[in-house]
Length: 113
Length: 110
Image (cartoon, rainbow over all chains, first blue to last red; front, side, top):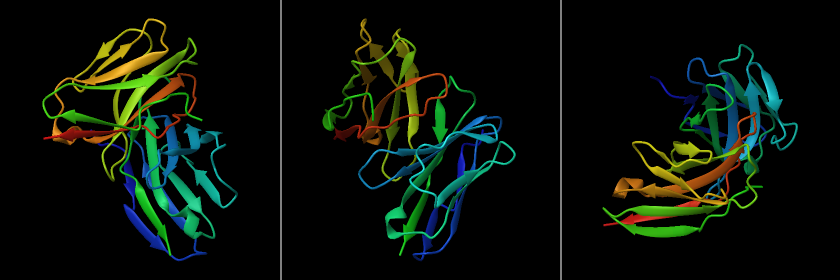
């Protein structure tokens, strides 16, 4: 079946602009994660949804970052007033239920110029 | 912080078994060992996970020591396409997120 889909695959934006990154999880998966990965490092946790609610948002670096999952399926990661330091690969993963493996999408590469 | 320690890099000859070690000396009784890999510019790919018994699937085998303080991921016949960064992650099954360390960069050499 279809895997986790992330759009766009690449996004270039100017410093100070607002961006939205979209994640379509595998159908029926209740859990959804967002991660950020800088070059040469492992993925860094941002936020975890169980259904529609954010069960853990402790990884969001500051209040410019926000994520929603209004219907418990698609999720959008929103970044306000982007900074050059926000440039990274943003990864989304979904999980059928808590005690199973998570499957990752191919990521959105964000470049802030 | 990641609860695991892995060597930063390893080489393996094509066709030979690749044995990737992972130390997780502080693992608790309800925590599983997960392995993922990441090929350049792609999202992490799930490989295998286990609690205390050894596990095998079409991709790899996972050997967990009896005291559960370490484990080894085995790719039985490594190919050039197995060149990737391999991440060992310890996680409970009650909603804890996956914490990635720097992983092991495996290079499969022709």
